[in-house]
Length: 285
Image (cartoon, rainbow, N blue to C red; front, side):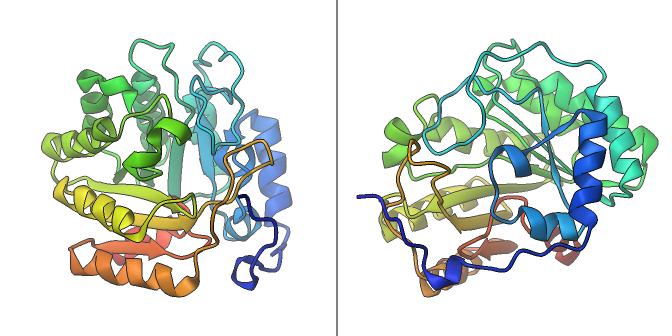
């Protein structure tokens, strides 16, 4: 049964220092999307206040129908060849020190959008040679050449989310495959062992504690360095329901276990998200 009432640990004040208005105006002028807006992230105003944001590449329409995601599911548009340049210029205008890039899944493209990721990384580095870059990619439908090409572009962090425990994939992520996602992270490490790899898991979707810990162990076996664990919050009543609001002490338990099995960084908290505190995570590495 879906839950309606938020517990106290999921409530927080809205931080507004004017930075959000500046970022939103700049994004509108540049005609760029962010996952912060499109996924209805609960941390959007906190992150914008710190001048942190995550660009959404390849349009705003996804070819998959994950039951948890608020991103648009309509037919995707053609790739915008000027997007890499606009992202680099916007990063410069906003004086970003840390650029985070993610994308919708584009199963309609032969390479899954890999070449576009590479162009965005290269464009940003040409204009801002000292900028740090984190990417959060789809699984590229197991296209080894695509994943390898993106890894060889040498982002500072290569992230790919597991999202949920394997048992829930059929109902929550019908177009995805757990083994495929673990394999992608393993491939990135084989391609360049110096790249920091990262993944994220949502809880509160009906999984069991032992299932989460099993996923954490699988990620470590694949060489994953950073991990985020956060509470799933259903975007609307039409999306996958929340089965449980996981208590903060359980997130601490997951964090302790993550460090015990060898993760370099574990962000485990109710409102933790893949890109949340990403700048701090890399600085602490």
